[in-house]
Image 1 (cartoon, rainbow over the protein chains, first blue to last red):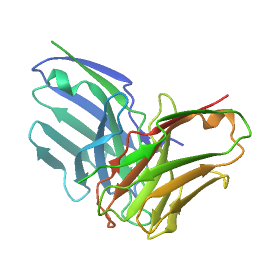
Image 2 (cartoon, rainbow over the protein chains, first blue to last red):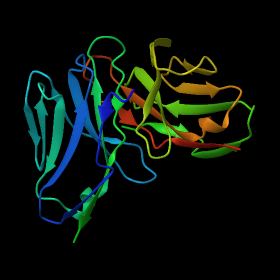
Image 3 (cartoon, chains in turn red, purple):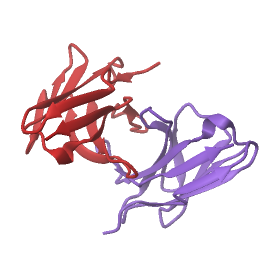
Image 4 (cartoon, rainbow over the protein chains, first blue to last red):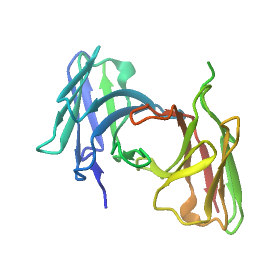
Length: 113
Length: 113
């Protein structure tokens, strides 16, 4: 039962262009969403988050959009840089309970020069 | 401010053995959680500890157990190892609260032969 899905295992984008990573979820109890970035041999690092009371959150080059009716969120990176090449995980949690994070399978983003 | 550190970074065990993985939380963080990341998958929640008590558990059997110590360091113990336990085990810490972001360690890669 995959409650958080990232349907694109990989994405290749040219440097300077926009990268769009997508994530879908099925559990309507989720009300807090996060994106993590992971380089090889390192743990995931927090990138950006959004609460369900918002539909957009921006931090520098990174913007997360949330469409609650579609149970869909996306991460936009503009402009994309070579250092953005990594695996990106979408995660969701319900504020009630143990606040565990449910992760998607990840999308490997490659930024080409 | 030190980050989350885990040991050992790599280890190899045989089926049926027991393993203990260790984690030192980020300074000031009183909540620690453990995740299992199988190859090609996102991290899966094992359990969470707050003030030395387990306060949330994922879909893992009882042979996965943990401890949190007064200094907020933590252990993950796995008994009767199975081949499918081969994975990257991630420790993450945060401050208590509904939206505190998780800070991950680099992980311990366990191989079960």
